[in-house]
Image 1 (cartoon, rainbow, N blue to C red):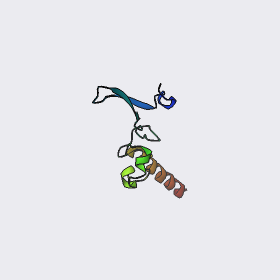
Image 2 (image 1 turned 120 degrees about the horizontal axis):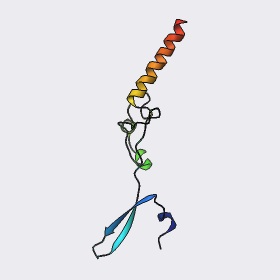
Image 3 (image 1 turned 180 degrees about the vertical axis):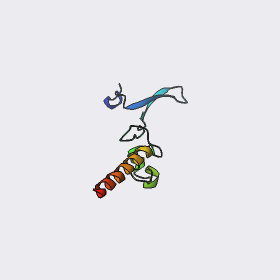
Length: 95
């Protein structure tokens, strides 16, 4: 009987044929999903898609883009946010 932690679909299942003719089931972790923009929900470019344990060993420059709001917003939403803040500052200073 399979142990309880393997009954759920948390792990992907793969049937593997061994040399002796026996077939076993291997349980592998599912890959993490792609990260999305917090504003529009579009998939972020330049973001690494790894397990959390592997992310600890990678450099920050390889984890996410090195620009404002990198890893949180896509480039178009970032531009809109920066332009909006700049316009807000200009409108406050003109009064």
